[in-house]
Amino acid sequence: MKDKSLLVLLNIGLLLVMFSRATSGMMANALILNGAALAVICGVMYWRQAKQKHTKKTDK
Image (cartoon, rainbow, N blue to C red; front, side, top):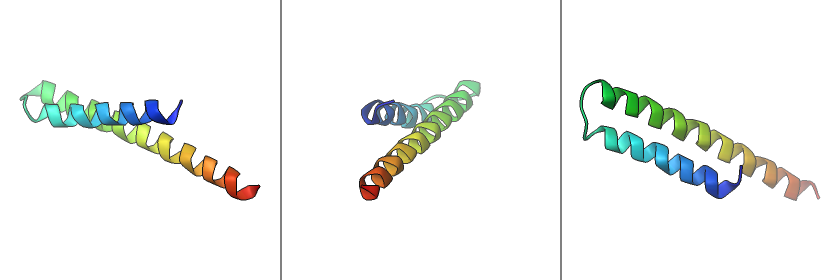
């Protein structure tokens, strides 16, 4: 995945968590869990790609 698409998905996950504060009940719990999972997964993937790019640049 490209860096920009990972950042977009990361922001969507964070927006889901923020939006869940406006809802209540089971839907809020589902939004928090889905948003947090999406944000964490995309954040880790973005970090790993950035780390790989950095190591490729320093190895040359």
